[in-house]
Amino acid sequence: MARVLLVDDDPDLRLIIATGLEAVGGFEVDVAASGPEGIEAARRRRPDIVVLDVKMPGMDGPATVGAFRREARLADLPVVLLTASIGPEGRAALADLDVAAVLAKPVDPTSLAFTLRGLLEQRPQDGASTDSDMMAGLVRDMWSRLRPRVLTRLDDLDAVQRRAEAGQLTTQEREGALVEAHRLAGSLGTYGFHDASEAARRAEQVLEHDPLDVAALGRVLAQLRRGLSA
Image 1 (cartoon, rainbow, N blue to C red):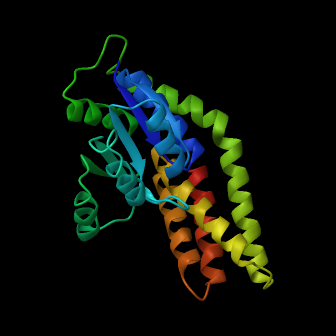
Image 2: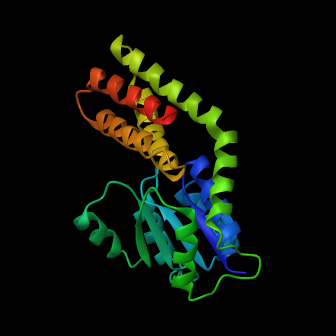
């Protein structure tokens, strides 16, 4: 059974992608929440292929690829990078890192499973499924369990917006909100909430901009809620 190492800082996204790779691709999946964790996981059990998020706090995806390439035992690991909101020039720059593929978020776990199989030149193993309806059912089940947590994360972003309105927002709170908006954009798109995912992406852009446009942040967070209720 081929082993995949999935490295992403969003716990919800790790869950849905890992479930898809196991159920659809027949992979054994190890997960890590950061670049350093991913390096240690690869040292413990060398994977056949790595799926790696580009934008992570601390050590990002390109830095993690560099760390793999500097270790003799891990230097030839095939790596698939997952990224969002990137143009042709940025995609070409990532491909120059000597990676197997650069894929756009949100990622469809079913398509990702077959992409990895193709890169490894392997057929689906016994027990792997090609039933997209089955995967859709798994996604619905995971969403029903994770929805309360997603709504709590959105409440936290609303609290950030209120603190910004009151002139009380700290740099640390803003940085935390930026990370949460980025995570929500990826996971909501994977769950099929594309309008909400795009609103979270715009919230991320607003939070990155100085000075912070508080009114714009309020508008995109309202759009995010509407996208979840659609």
